[in-house]
Image 1 (cartoon, helix red, strand yellow):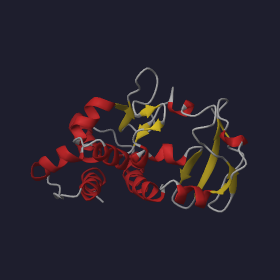
Image 2 (cartoon, rainbow, N blue to C red):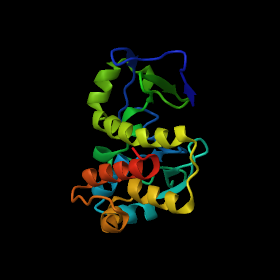
Image 3 (cartoon, rainbow, N blue to C red):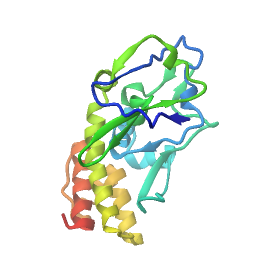
Length: 220
């Protein structure tokens, strides 16, 4: 994988890319990958599959402590070195695919005062050779990525807030973080015990969980 760090794309800058079933590399980007799942990704996927968040996490994911943040990071389990949702015809969860899949071949960089994108190039990918030009803004709209970016920004405020404090979470705090941010159905069941507001809507409950952790860890 090569990320073009020399070129920073704003929303109105353009790039060439087109992926379709007839392209020789179709589905190749769904193999041998490390796919980090954000809280909103998990909500969308577990509902797409008609599973509880607990069932989804147990069956399809693993987690580790992030080297940079010291916080729980959830990643997708591969099956035969491929995404468990990829089929010969493409993605079985396409309408609810994660943010990184939607943005590909772009990677999003976000700071307090800036937002820009880099293009990812991989040897196998023929999509860059297709004569289809997009602005970053058009790509985000076409791929339905806007709401994902918004939700991920809310989560990253929590992550960066904890990171900026240089705080090391103990086992109890780590468990609360995992439940509050990733396991929305368990959070709902334990809302009274944890002191987090209960919401029936999954996205609202996810947002309450993130808000709860900000108050719990950052006292925001």
